[in-house]
Length: 243
Image (tube, helix red, strand yellow):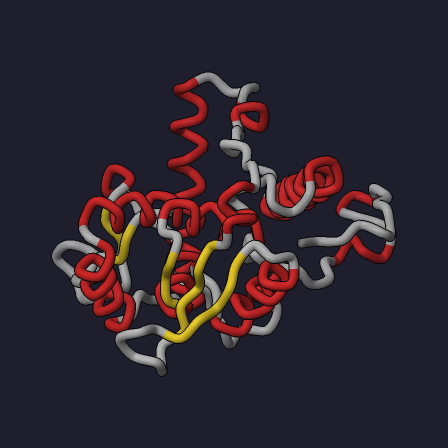
């Protein structure tokens, strides 16, 4: 009789999530919030280093976060003198984010994650990625997460505004495959994705689901281990803070 290990797998995933968050806190404490080009303020700075002036709407889509969350990040960056917000000359209703000279001079690392996955060989990393794709796709189907027409309209407009080459570079930084307008081949539209060898990818974050924002890489609020214990009863420092 096969042993039900669903609970064990869920606990391991929770443990992995907690460890990744711990690693981020440690990196933040050692190098500061700007050093990591894949998280929080550092991620905004990395995009602006490629596109020194961009609208807040475009930036919000590229980061995959809500406008409110973006404004919180921009407030911190603006207060530190790394960016400034100005009305667009073409349409003053549109707010532009511009990288300052201080922001241009701020050093950033390349974001090397090889240490996390170095315990796996290339074949194992590929298989692990396939398993994650399947789990993500199943959860998206359960939660009803779909790509919307607004995302496609933004992509078409952004490609025209930024130029095809710059748009492609920024989309690579965004991470994850892109929305496929027709969803799964041979079936109705379900917000499926193309890319990554035809595998499913992540859809937009479920903004109206309580607690969903905690799983965003840009989330800066409380997490379960802040009470002093993490998964499996591992203690954590109470003074750890996000970006």
